Image 1 (cartoon, rainbow, N blue to C red):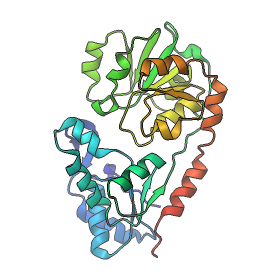
Image 2 (image 1 turned 135 degrees about the horizontal axis):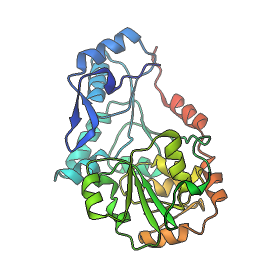
Image 3 (image 1 turned 90 degrees about the vertical axis):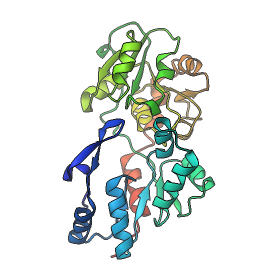
Image 4 (image 1 turned 90 degrees about the horizontal axis):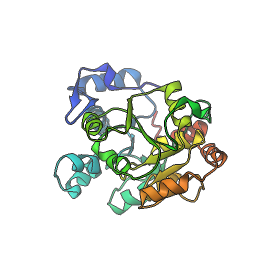
Amino acid sequence: MRLVTPDRFRTVPCPTYPEIRLALFPGRRVARTIEDFRPQAIHIATEGPLGMAARAHCLKKGYPFTTAYHTRFPEYIHARVPLPLDWLYAVMRWFHGPSSAIMVATQTIEDDLKARGFKPPVRRWSRGVWTDLFRPRDKAFLDGPRPISLFTGRVAVEKNIEAFLKLDIPGTKVVVGDGPQLDDLKRRYPAVRFVGVKEDEELAQYFAAADVFVFPSRTDTFGLVLLEAMASGVPVAAYPVPGPLDVVDRSGAGVLSDDLAAAVRGALAIPPEVCRRHALKYSWEASFDQFEGNLHVFR
């Protein structure tokens, strides 16, 4: 297997989102990489410059390929630029149109793409969680008034973080992550603990030390952090939208409500073992088997 990622290219920061790097003029190099490697299957994981370059070369050469719909890009762009969602979804239909199959994480996203007129077959590719790393631990890692409500992820407008920060709930709010909204939110919510980016072992400690994981996003296609929280024995409070509906709903490991404060209060009563037991259903092995089965092998 060979991965073609932005770190192989000269890049520029994505407008309004500098943490994301966009490859500059990757067409020739992507084409050469594909021809030199002679893959048996090609999967395009992003609609960005690298994905565009791979798509163009595959169409030129007649190579079949699969794509993935990881992120609700139309909603993300619409949150920053006042472009009609219909136009943005038209671009997505154009990009994914020649794909042999579009891989999505949940039934809700599959239904949504079909309703919006996406033509290629839509196939399931669920996510996996590293349950050895994300596991229940000593909650003394975090101090401060309990309960501790945690959010981890990009600190950006599409994550709807202010819906969490504005909640009138007892205890301590903790935000793990970085992004374009960080400085503004730190200034406007001084009582919230913004701790920056955490990774691996330290990130797992933050998850496990929380009492509830609050997921205010309304635009995620899955929300891997939901699994990481539940694997850590931490219940989830979220809106009843795609992602949480597919991962959390009817599991007993979280509460979904349009009243996010009520969801937090309800989630705090959920035992850690219920959360952990549900997360264990999402193994890396099952995720890999789904991915491999969805590929279009042509050599």
